[in-house]
Length: 273
Image (tube, rainbow, N blue to C red):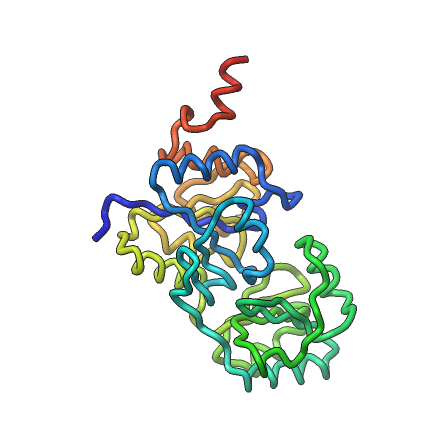
């Protein structure tokens, strides 16, 4: 057991990224400081890899848990992937078309949709500050699809939940919900990395803010929730840090003792003034 090593998992939206979908300088410096100490850093998100490719480069990440644990990469190599059944996605696509609901499909290499200019898909991608996806309603016929997003209200989603019994539905706002195989979660992806590194659970940490972070926060040794996080997540957290727009990552890492003030250049500059 690699009992000396530690690893920190970071959600993206509302956690590693602030409310403006940008990365604070304090967060960038904290990530650099962790790596200098030999602490592993891993993105852990519901997004498909294509949706955070630029962040991987900007923040020098090469390990991530994507699509809510459905696809896991360690140092550039795939160590776990759990695609959905093509026949299920075909059935889902046909039903969504009949109902007039938008879908987006997450694969390792793409993020596409079933409809041109669907208003709810437009709203959802605008909130994430990503371009409207390419239309490819038959993506399941030529690519592994790990996760699907259904753009429907909670009431409308009941039909899908009734029909697709072996699947989980994780809502991330009032008009959209993630659909993935039952049992899939960020926690599964975290477990795959801990097993790969042979690191004990007590040496793992995670930062999150939303409903799809519940199992992640419970799965690690120390769960840290942003002040902008949902109340239910704060209730199970080991620590609550400042918000994503108020140096929450840096303050949380200081709070749990993974970093010290001397590790952060920004704090050293403030001391000199």
